[in-house]
Image 1: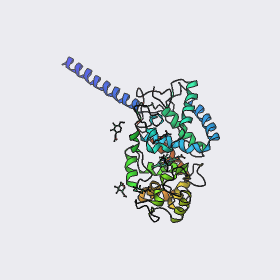
Image 2: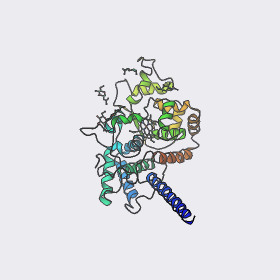
Image 3: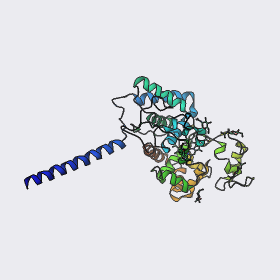
Image 4: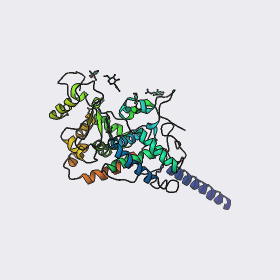
Amino acid sequence: MASRTMLLVVFSGLAMASVILSWSSSAMAQQLDVGFYGKTCPKVEEIVREEMIRILAAAPTLAGPLLRLHFHDCFVRGCDGSVLIDSTAGNTAEKDAPPNQSLRGFGSVQRIKAKLDAVCPDTVSCADVLALMARDAVVLSKGPYWAVQLGRRDGRISIANETNQLPPPTANITQLIQMFAAKGLDLKDLVVLSGGHTLGTAHCSAFSDRLYNFTGADNAGDVDPALDRSYLSRLRSRCVSLDDNTTLAEMDPGSFLAFDASYYRLVAKRRGLFHSDSSLLADAYTAGYVLRQATGLYAADFFRDFAESMVKMGAVGVLTGGQGEIRKKCYVIN
Ligand code: HEM
Ligand SMILES: *[C@@H]1O[C@H](CO)[C@@H](O)[C@H](O)[C@H]1NC(C)=O
Ligand SMILES: *[C@@H]1O[C@H](CO)[C@@H](O)[C@H](O)[C@H]1NC(C)=O
Ligand SMILES: *[C@@H]1O[C@H](CO)[C@@H](O)[C@H](O)[C@H]1NC(C)=O
Ligand SMILES: *[C@@H]1O[C@H](CO)[C@@H](O)[C@H](O)[C@H]1NC(C)=O
Ligand SMILES: CC(=O)N[C@H]1CO[C@H](CO)[C@@H](O)[C@@H]1O
């Protein structure tokens, strides 16, 4: 009797221990931590920030591209730096897929990574560098600050055709909702993170179908009905044909270098640049958010929401613990 009780105690003790073990290891495998480099690279944030100040002083238009790089990283294979990897003889990487054609800022990511490695070699992942650069790009553009959770590991895989997980500018609200949901991001994240379009520029080719060839009929009247008519003629004078794939347009004209809530005022006036931007008016919840922000009275809420959604997006599909690697050069796996 006594030995049976003993056995039971031993067994349940073992079961408990294994439950605790597997619980803690899975928790560790998923957890990012604001203080992750506290001991191994305590100056990481300071170094990134100083370099970002230099980079944006020399090239102010890089703030948008650096924010966008982090978004593209997180939506394909999680935030694992896979967007940074170069193609090789045997593999076409994300970088060389069509949606990338407009990505910029790769050189500055590597430049900051090299600065960090000079102080703390082989310690900070490229995925974390990108997350910090995106945050600083926003802060230095007068946007909100958020504490960046760190501890991402770099992936070893980057496949061009996986960029089909990135929403295209032609997406309607149903597609946007689905593609964000596939990354664990909800309607609020969708409408809030779309506000990232307060920064930067876009190529005519990302939206000229709305001006000339919306349904494929390819005639002067074939325009996106969701686009404000006077804005349409203004955009047509900038993007004179469907073939123009070099001219840039500011997404938030007048303040494309400043992170502010004016994107929502544009969208509310049917002047969002992409069909995807205008689609935010096609769902009651996202439209409600747009219209509230369009009043200009609640920018502080947008800033707080943006910070929150960026933390959420920054945790999508991350590699941690012993997964992946700490890349030596951001553009090539070790
Ligand atoms: C909601 C779905 C989204 C779509 C369909 C979309 C699409 C696009 C497209 C087509 C461009 C223009 C690229 C070019 O032609 O140069 C662009 C630019 C940009 N996107 Fe998005 N995007 C989305 C979400 C986001 C998110 C979540 C962020 C960040 C939080 C973001 C940040 C940016 C920035 C900053 C730029 C400007 C880049 C530059 O100045 O070169 N976008 N986006
Ligand atoms: C994507 O590319 C990989 C290899 O690069 C290939 O195995 C896979 O079939 C492709 N998938 C699609 C949907 O094209
Ligand atoms: C959205 O686009 C998809 C794919 O093009 C299409 O099947 C669907 O009908 C569209 N939905 C709406 C609400 O326009
Ligand atoms: C207009 O759109 C259709 C359908 O998307 C496409 O097949 C066609 O090539 C476009 N025309 C031009 C001139 O790009
Ligand atoms: C841009 O257009 C030119 C000619 O219209 C074409 O040769 C070139 O391949 C296009 N570039 C891209 C990236 O589509
Ligand atoms: C920045 C970058 O890597 N751009 C590449 C995007 O993909 C095209 C091909 O589709 C390449 O020519 C670019 O070099």
